[in-house]
Image (cartoon, rainbow, N blue to C red; front, side, top):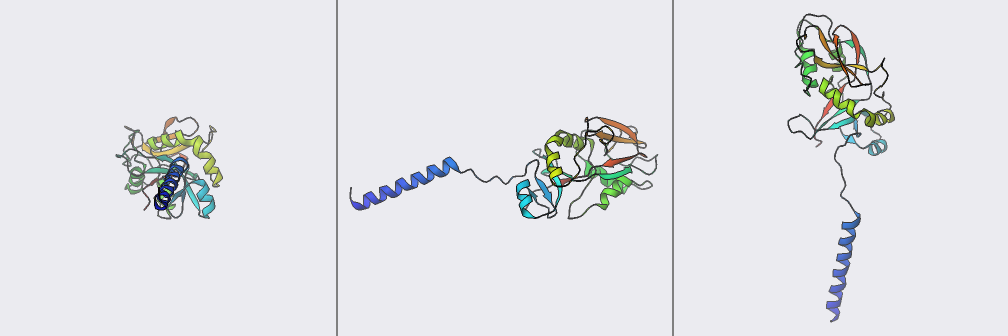
Length: 222
């Protein structure tokens, strides 16, 4: 083999070695959103490590990544803090227009219906509307969305605490939260509470004051 042939053979061997090395030891960077990622005030979600290094302000933690094309958004994030106890409605006798569907992921639509109903106000919904900022549309989760949050509680609680938030509780005297779902057939008087301690639901008179843990729907980042 002449000198040129030997040189080309050496180059080929080097390329093969590089390709084999790359294939064997380097995985592509995974930038997809995951449960436990942190939603920041700039609207972006980051891994906890990237968030901690970014200097950004955290507002919520991803608790569900959506793989169902029929559900809006790419996932849900739960806000870091509870809202103070408020009544679902300031008076009884009027249905407030929620779906009353225990299986629907429609907290956003329900919360707007509560806000928009004439002749009765929802102190709970008003409080959530008042917290809107940074372009994030917070809302009161439906029963179905609270079930997703309950299922992810043990995983997301350490991230909530690491970001300075209130962990989702287990204690019986502090685990009940309003959902945005009215009780079917009793919409004028009752709505559902959800227990973060057990996953149970309880139909409850709307005039009672209970905590809310707002969530937000996430969409693809540009």
